[in-house]
Image 1: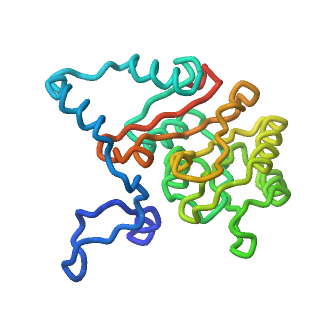
Image 2: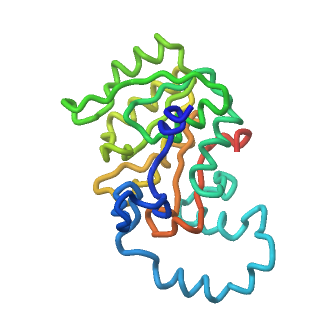
Length: 236
């Protein structure tokens, strides 16, 4: 049981005592090194009295701001208590039978899939290929294991590897052709150079769900604020 639990332990827990009593050097939580924006600190201080109220369950102001930023309708967004909550919501709502997961990958993907009763198959990312997914192998694995959902991290955690734009487009087209759900975690994307944001593909690929967060990009891990984008209004 302990080994099974350890499989899903990830970083960020700097509150756990260290073996030598020294402070943690935590390389697992990749937070913007510039820290929290002074404007966010000002906004938090200015609205501190608002903590006596429950937040707006429809999150109208944040949806409106995201809508302007991405040029998409407010109804294209779902907000979560951190990005991690949305892994589980997605898995429990879509109920995939089998998830195909390129590995190594963030442990919460697998944990969420298992929690929702899905089987998980693995597509190894090879170091000699610079941890880049192999489209042909991925397509063969989808057919072989009869996966109905693929989960990708872009950039991937823990390899840090970005998936090239052309390869991403091919994966998107395959998923659309075969009606395979594609969950893409872009939580680290804004901290990457030369990254391809998949939001322009949303109208043409209803199978696509994109996960993002304020956590990493804006140094706001303690505020627990993630969001997802999808063109499938019924799913949202």
